[in-house]
Length: 53
View 1 (cartoon, one colour):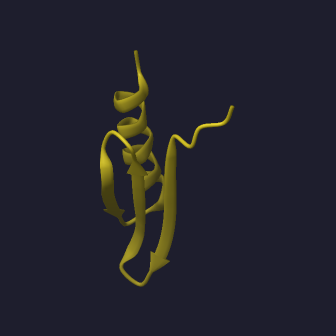
View 2 (cartoon, rainbow, N blue to C red):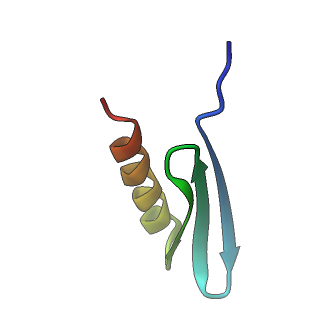
């Protein structure tokens, strides 16, 4: 059986990059940065904290 763990959306505009992360446990969070790498690192850290045993 499949279970959706999270939903992530990435956007780019003239100000930089943004990501919207939604999980059942943490709800909706938004991260902003000048580079995609910066935003990806924030999302990865958040997911590791939330789903680590």
